[in-house]
Length: 327
Length: 293
Image (cartoon, rainbow over the protein chains, first blue to last red):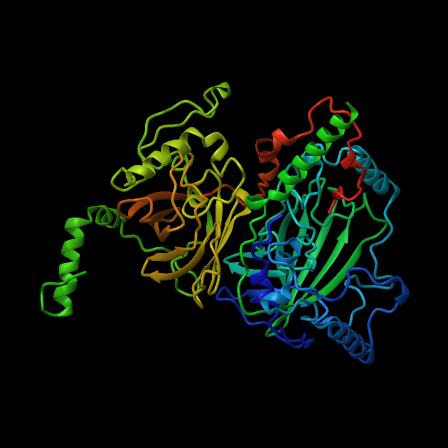
C-alpha cells in the first residue's frame, strides 16, 4: 500500500494546533455568500478513543488534574523511549515506514486537539450500542463467505487494502492514525470537504434539495445540508451495503452531522448515527477539529497499490509450493 | 527574447505582440476565437464558474482530429467504437518529437491494458477536465476546489498563498489568478504517468500546463490548456475544449468508485485458479497477513 505522502502530512500536523476555545458566544465569520465560513485546512487528529475504555464506566470527562497527569505520563513514556529506538538499516521496511524520527519529525501528533472527553462517543456508556441479532448474523455470514478464501482474489481482501475507502472517511468522519488532514471549501450553495485519506471528496448541497433517488446507493451515502444559525447540519442517507463507517452498518444507515465554529481556529464536529437494521439505538459523538498551516496532499492509493498484486501473487506462490510438496 | 529595438517598453511590447502574431499563430487563433462574454459574478466580484461541468466526451477518445475507428475489443460491437471528432488541438496536430511519436503509437496499441483510465487511476491535468465524467467547481474564498467524479480525483487551486509542489502527483500543484474574465492556472509537478486521452497521447514529467478557464455563455465554459514539455514535444501546444454545465434537475456529482471495475484487469491473472487444492497454507491466517485490515 502506498504511503508516499504521509511524510509531508506529518510535517504539517506536527505544527501546534491551538486548544479548542469552547466559547458559546463565538459568531463565525461569513463567506461572501453570507453563510458561516468553515473554510480552511484542518487536522482531525485526536487522542480521544472512539469508545470509552471499559474501566472508566460512566465517566465522560477527565478532570483537569487527570488531563495533566495523563500528559505527564505520556511525556515520560516518550522520554523513556527516546534514544532507545533502533537505527533502521537503510532500505529495510522499518527504514521506510513510519520512522518519523529520522526526518526530524514528531511521531505523536495526537495531542494536537485538546479535549477532556474519555471517548468520542458521548453519553453514559460512551460505546457503540449492542448490535441487533440480524446484524451479527449478517456479519458472520459475510465472514463465513470468505473464510478460507481470503487470498483467492482482490474482492476477498479488505476494503481499505483494495483502495476503495478508508474507515475514517465516514460519515461520520473519524480521526485517523496518520494524514488526518482535511480541507473545507465553500462554493455557492455547496460545502466541499476533501479528506487526505484517501483523497475522497464530499460535496454537500445546502440549497434545500431532497435526497437523490433511492436507487442511488453509495459507499459514503448521499448528503444534503442546511444552515441552522451558525451550524452546518448534514443529513446523509442512500448508503450501499458497505458504508464507509463499517462496524456492521447496513444500507439503512442514517447519519446526521453538525459543524460549528467555536473559535477562530476551531470547529466542533458532532454526529449521530442510527441504523434500525444494525443497532438497538442510535449513538452520538463529538470531537474538535483545528486549523493547521499547510495543505492537503494527494494520497494516490489505487495508483500505487503494489500491495494487492504482491499479496495475491504471494498466495499463488504458496499454493504452487504446497502442490509441489505433495508430489 | 532578444530585442533589437532600443526604444521604450511600449515599443518592445508591441514588437513582442507582432512576433507572437506572426510566429505563434496557434495561440493567437485560440485567443481571438474566445468570444467577449461577461460572466455573472460571485458575491466577491469574480466571474462565477461554480457548477457541475462536463465535456461532450469526445476529447477523451483522441485530442487530434480523427475519423471513426473500431473498438479496442471488437467483441464489444459498436458500443465502444471510437467516435469521430473535429479535434481539440489548436492547429490540429500535437507537435511530437519523432521518438515520442513512436511511443504514442506503442501506447495506442497497448491502450486496453496501459491506459491509466482503464486502471482507475486519476485522470491528471489536463485530461481529468475532459473525460466522459462530470466534475464540480466550488469557488471558495480564496481557494477553489475542483472535484472530479472519475477516480475521486480532486484539486485545490491556490489563489491565496501560492503552493509549492512538494513532489510530483497525479493532479499536480495548481496556483491560480484571475485575469479579467479568465481564471489562469499554473499547473506543475504532474509526474509522467497520466495520459492525455484514450489514444495514448502522453507527456513526460517535464510537463507544464497553463490552463485558462473562461465563460463563453451562461452554460458553456471554455477550457484552454497550453501544454509544454520539451522532452516530448518540439514546441508548446494548446487544446481548447468546451465544457457544458450539467443542467439536469438535481444535477449532482455522484460517487464513481472505479476501483471495483478495474480489479479484474489489474489482478485477474493473479486469482486463485479454479481447481487449486485447498486449503492453501497461506490461508490459515498464520504470519502471511490477515483477511482484513
